[in-house]
Image: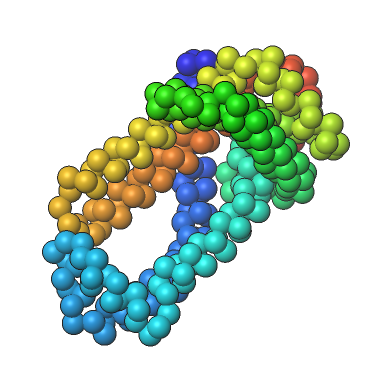
Length: 301
């Protein structure tokens, strides 16, 4: 488990250009969504004589006055833009995953990185998109069923429970929900990987075989995912800790430093996700055989 993740990290470092390419793609989508809101905020600051107060620290009264500028809700505008970007990102995830797995698989290695990413993205897009719809539906359905079942058990058993028992039950609920939904989310990863290895076409058959694979190799499959999730959580906590103790970004130097740190965190998050996919691919390749992949590599060269 640890060795698989470490190998995935090493391969990702070797393919660092792919990480930067994925980061740039998401950065462009985020910039497209944020640009209208940032332009609105700039105009609002230009028309407020008290806006400079925020340079010395957070002031809720000044912020409340700013968001009423031009009678347009700034947070509503930003939320609308981000919602659109998130919807685009969900659809684009199948495109990006296809390019990522094309590079990870090693097929067409004689070609450049951009060529392999674009070819893989286009070749696998519709199959990965169908898998995403199937996997997303299964994940939501499983979450709803588990929550209803836990609620049905909770009502008679914990009507007069102590506060400690209530918190323990809440933790148990979260663990069960995470494990259950995680099964279908991990199945989505392994189904995509199996499509690349076998060049499979029947997406329902491929996806519904994947939960069985995850269940049979639960310790390794869940363990690799947990290791990466913990690493991402540590990054986020470290950033929050820095934000808590850092001085207010009241100069261009501090603003640029803050922005640079945010982008480094995002690049590392992308790198950890790519490392997990790489580790999962190598593991699935070993467990399911490599004949189909070797044939694909031969034909690609």
